[in-house]
Amino acid sequence: MTTLKDYLGSLVRDLNHARVIADVETANIAKMYVEHDLLKHFSIPRMKIQDTELTIPIAIDELDTVVEKDYQPIDNKRFYTKTYNEIKNVFQVSSFNREVSGPLRKEIYQKIDSLEKALKGGESIQVSLESFTEEVSNVTIDIIAQNKKEREVFEKALEYNKANNGVQIKESLRTALIAYLKPEIKPREVTGRIEDAQITVESDKLKEKRPESLVYIKMKITEESMEWQTMEDADGNIVAKLMAE
Image: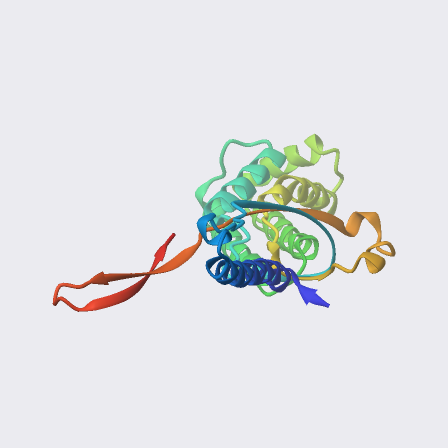
């Protein structure tokens, strides 16, 4: 089994080698012409292929993947704003008093930090988000229910969410937060390195491959020949340089 980059490199190498063989044959023909009484008056035939187009079927067997290193799963500021706004929405208020808002904001920021660490550590989005919303819902209910000034807000929230107690309203808040916040979490990107893909190119083996694993490579190669040219440098010395033909 070979990699895609090695296979494509071998194709270009083989085309270069074909050009070498052609030039060796041209040199042999030139020698024959110069030694022939009649042929020496004719131009020496030499074939040059400007462009080569290839359509190559291959099967991708294995694709190396690279996991995103600098993973930033959430925009902390935006995530906080959406969390706080959804809490206000569930409790049907435009704002909380300072005795509630201060501790609540602090707790949300701390929970967001923990959420980000869990996501960067490899924990699944669903599990991390459920844990976050559970903790935020618990602390929100505790802070609001224990504040006498917001007791009326708590009672209205029970009525609005058709809840009989704090447990039910907590569940309503948790469900709302999950639905509202999940789109804000970016999954860790895993990209495939196509150049290192393990491929199959043998025609008999390609017949055994699944159709979805087959791809066609369209490759166009343009010849850029090089030749040695002699020239005089600034010091008057004759030097040879490899130049484009």
